[in-house]
Each structure stands twice: as structure tokens, then as C-alpha cells.
Amino acid sequence: MTHIHPLHAFWLSAVLLLAGSVEAQTLPDFTELVEQAGPAVVNIEATRTAEAAAARGPNSMDEQEMPEIFRRFFEQQPGMPQVPRDRTSMGTGFIISADGYVLTNHHVIEGADQVVVRLRDRRELDATVIGSDPQSDVALLKLDETGLPTARIGSSSALKPGQWMVAIGSPFGFEHSVTAGIVSALGRASQMAGQQYVPFIQTDVPINRGNSGGPLLNTSGEVVGINSQIFSNTGGYMGVSFAIPIEVAMDVVEQIKETGYVARGLLGVNVQEVTREMAKSLGLPRPGGALVGGFSPDSAAQKGGLKRGDVILRFGATVINRSSELPPVVGATRPGTQVDVTVFRDGRERSLPVVVGELPREPGEQVSRSTPSSAAPSNPLGLDIEDITAEQREQLGLEENEGVVISRIRSLAGRRAELREGDIVLMVGRTAVGSAKDFNAAVKDAKPGEPVMLLVRRGDQSTFVTITPSREESR
Image (cartoon, rainbow, N blue to C red; front, side):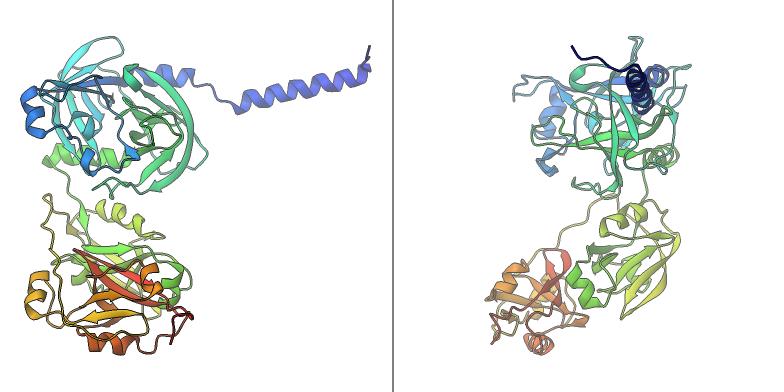
């Protein structure tokens, strides 16, 4: 039998006591938080009549535009046949004012003819949709009731990765379920169509179908976000969920109340990430910012002096490290505001005063692509280039002597750059090209191993790509 010396037993007891104390301090207790915040969280049932469902078709609620791995998590009743009938989805929301205003997700109530809100005390109240904004996925509802419990609105600006978060919602219809996790990342760009204006909060809080529209709470019990999306191969919890920052949601609320719609700022630029090769070609000390590849018609950016090939480094006081950081800060700017935009051009920074435009509330028409002809010889990049006729330029919306078309890709470098036959090349570096002769002259001195930057238009999008001739293919 093993005997423990009394002194050793004393120290062992002290270590165990200290370990228990550290554990008690490290693991939070959310019971008081949930007790305070829970009454303001509501279950939402949105019903579309058979007639409305048939008119919208079976694949509504943005399913066609949604990448398969990104899912919005409202709950539909199982076993619904494809024949027209009433359709019901369930989600979550929370009360933001005692006189009955409720926040939830746009996709929870989209297309609904009737919305019923169920409180924790089991009261069921009919809700009126005051307004909703698909681009932020925020909807504002109104209950004809007063003296309601309200959620405390906080701020997401002080959040840091690693902080504890709590979600309250109705996953799979299980009302007022509580889950907890941590902030994984901030300012995430969504892969959902049309949601580039939201800098999402990424967490590992367990979120599932039915949690849509529910609050994301900090440890003080304040709402800092609205749970909106999950990243999942199965449609269930995978440890990656996304919430709309509460500041974005409350701005939508104020605009809906004031004007009935949400106005967003617009620069009117096509931007992309700056790769290491692009940074080297442009003379940037390191990759960063948003590279301007093109402009929408009558764009505020072009009026303010921005040019293709500029790298936007700052928008006002906000530093732009990635291209995905630009749309949210521009969208949050009121149209008509003058903002100093700092760009990198020709080896130095310059500040341009730009009056921000307004994002159209109706999507514009897409410009169709043509397939021009008339061949020209190959070049050091291994690309066959053809001229574009005046008629084809008019069809494409190009200016006179603007652009050439890639008719054939002969080089491995061209395929690695993901160029395609039919792509329109507008610029080589910062030099505009309007003929095959211009293009070949611009690239004739291209050296193996040295990246060449091309501004390429595909469809209605203009994007810079780098192509690096390989030594094996040089001749």
C-alpha cells in the first residue's frame, strides 16, 4: 500500500483547489444572461398561401443564388409535396422596443402572407412587416402590443476573436434553445449573391435551421449581431456560422422607418484582390488594398478621378486591406457624401475627393458578350489576339479603339492565368490596347519569369490578371 507524506498531501490538495478555482474562473456561467435576455427572444412562423407559393415557384427564398455550402437556416415543415399548398417556415427574432418592433432576417419572412410571433410566455401575436432589406438580410416587424420585454442593443465594434458569445433561437422548432461559442473572425465577406455590403461576424456558436434572425449576445447580455447564415455541407451545424453586425441592422431599421427603403453608397467600381505578383508589377511594397478593374456607367469613382489599375488603400479613415472590405464601408456611407479616397498609382499614393453615389434599388441589365474575329499572330505570352470590329464594340458597349479579343490560348502560362478564349483585353499594365498590333507591341519585351498584368473583361466584369511567361515556353 502506497503512503503519501502529509506535506505532499497538503500541496496536492492546494494544487487541486487552485485548479478548481482557475476552472471556475475560466468557464463562464450564462444562466443570469439567458434569464435577462430570453424574454425578448421570439419564435417566428411565416406562412405563404398556396397561391403565393405557386406564383413564386418551388425554389424561392434565394435558393437559386445560394452556393450549396452556404445555407440560411429557417425551418420548413417536413414532407411538403411539390403541389401548391400553404408553406410555413420558422425562424427567430427579438424585440427591440416595448411598443412592438421586432428584428429578424429578411429570408425568414420573404414572400409571407401571414407572420405570427410567439413570445416566451406563449402569447401568439400577428405581426406586420414594416419593411425588409434583402441585401443585408434584415427585416423589421411590428406587433400591436405595448409593454413588451426588450433586448439590450450593444455594439460589435469592440468584438475580438476568442470572445465568448451566446445565441438564443429555435433550431428545428425547439424554441428558446441556448448555445454558446466564441468569435472566430470579424469582417467576413459573404458568398451569398448581393450581400457584399455586410461585414459578417463569424463564430463557432452552434447554429442550426430555425436559428435565423435570432440574437447573438455578448457576455453582458447585449445583442451584437443577428444570426443569418451557416457554412455547411449537410445543412446542419459545422462550427462556422455568420451573424450580421447589430450596427448594420439598426441602420437598416432607422432607414426603413424614415423612408421605407435602404439607401446605400456606391463608388461604381469593379475591384479585386491584389496578389503578390500584382503588387510586384504595380510597385506596391506588399499585397493589399482593392485593385480597380472597371467602372459602372456614370460611376462616382470615375467622376472623382479614379482610373483602372488604381489600388484603393483607404476610404476616408478606413484602411482597405482586402477588396472585400471596401463594399461594406462604401455601402454604409450616405449617398452624396464626399469622401477622400486614397489610391496607389504610378508608384505613389494620392488622395482623390469622391462624392459617393447611390446603389440602384433595381439591378441593371447585363451586357452581352460577342465573339469577334480576324486573326493576328501569337506573342511572347502565347496568346492569339484578334481585333474587334466597330459593330462588335457597339454591341459590347466599348469605346472606339478599346479592347482586343483572345482567340486562342497556346501557352501553359495563359491557362494557368485562367484566361479564356473570347476574353476581351482592355489594358496591358496601365497601357490601353485597341488593336492586335497594340497588344503585341505592349508585350513584345515580356521576359520569362516576369509577371505581366492584363485588364480582362469577361461578360460585364473587368478584372486584372497576371500572366507569367515560363522559361520552358520562351522562344
